[in-house]
Image (cartoon, rainbow, N blue to C red; front, side, top):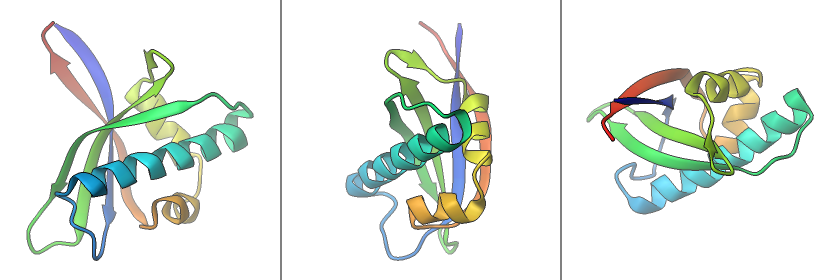
Length: 115
């Protein structure tokens, strides 16, 4: 059994359909942009990080949307704690600027997979 750390991001969205493929792709791109910004400002590095959305959920009647995603640096997955901490080093305003939505929670989730 292998453990994969994924990051969880919850934010308030408006107008977009979080169930659409377009929304997931748009959020992957925005997350890549904000992670690149965090990497440059916090770590003073510029490697190409890629994001893969694992889950997008939205509770009916609530504007909150939760994203569960992984972050990769080349072929290596970043630990969920490292990815969350990287975003956490930026202000909520900066993260919200890149995502177009203010974040409510940035956290790590452990997922168990059998290979």
